[in-house]
Image 1: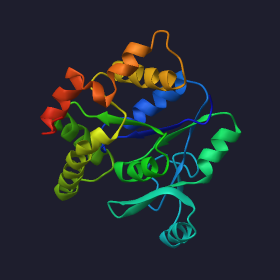
Image 2: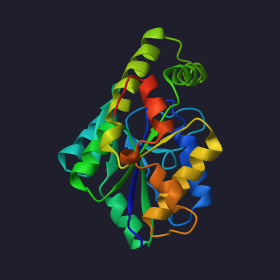
Image 3: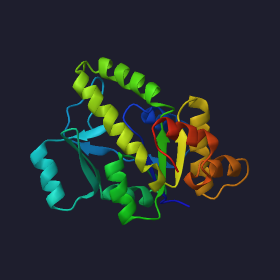
Image 4: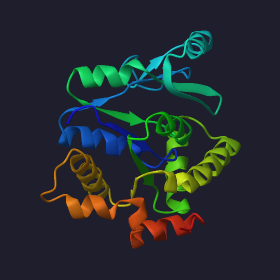
Length: 221
């Protein structure tokens, strides 16, 4: 069944990009949607691979022309998913994977309620802070105000977990990847070997592991 839209969201520093990259090596028929952004490229990033890098006037013109399925202003930079992405995936007989933040996910879920939404939860605020600190240092960002702003944003985003169909805790990478793979295969109709694992990740299942991680962020069911 091609044409399924998978939405994956997580606070910055949750390891989402690593999970998505591993998922794509394990599951065929997934097309990754490359977002547009006005932020500058980092390190070895290439235009058209990680993002389509563009300027603010061009991005705002695309917004005015209703060319985005979703878009958001994140820490002063625009990010958006072109409407053409889903049609392109379906035409090729593939499912579409959207790696987007909570703001964008809410927009897409409102327009396409059939989308399969997945939230990646950090194991604890302490682990998230360590990951964010390491990431900030790697990016050459040492401003404590920036780090605190990212941590505050993360805490607010975790509160949105109940709007998602699935949630998994990224504490052990191999397990998180297995859960993500199980969800994708289950939503495609597979049952053998993935049903229990996928269903344990449903937010309405409220697994002990998920609830423990959420409790550490002050989020309750």
